[in-house]
Image (tube, rainbow, N blue to C red; front, side, top):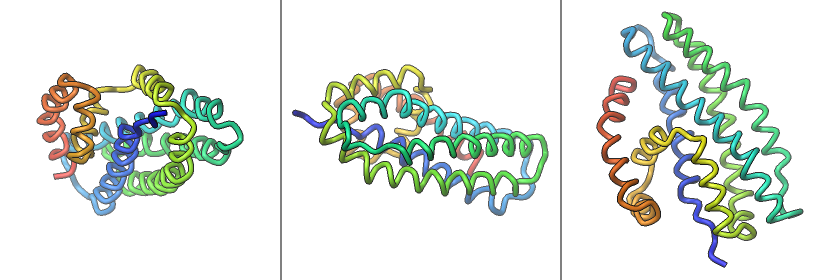
Length: 205
């Protein structure tokens, strides 16, 4: 049996953690900024938190049931599912703090909210990759995993995800994605990259 390809999931995990780390660092000492930049920061926080919420919701609805069907007693997802229930209040807190910041508020509440969210997500993803990835590779078929990824993509913001892939994938991972997704995926990443970089420069300098 050919094992599932976890490349896409690894990149998305890396991107979620990486952009939260960058936002935490950005907001730690952020004082005066322009209204345009404040709105851009808040919008980006909203995109990141929305994508994290969608990601763990799709895990609950699609990935966890697949793992339980495939691995049976070898899969213990209870505490990881509990983490998902703890993430939602932190995602909501970060979103509300971002809106307040865009309206002229202080960056400190946004920094603290992002820091709490980032710390929990780091811990959750490290545990998930340590415990669940080996179970997926051992028990889930390549076809079932590919079918699950197709279902997950239907509810995703593909443009945002492709920007993340272009930013966080290693050259080896990009080569693999090109082989799997074909020239259209590579072309879309290339077309989206300039706009993504402009937005990133506005936000992060």
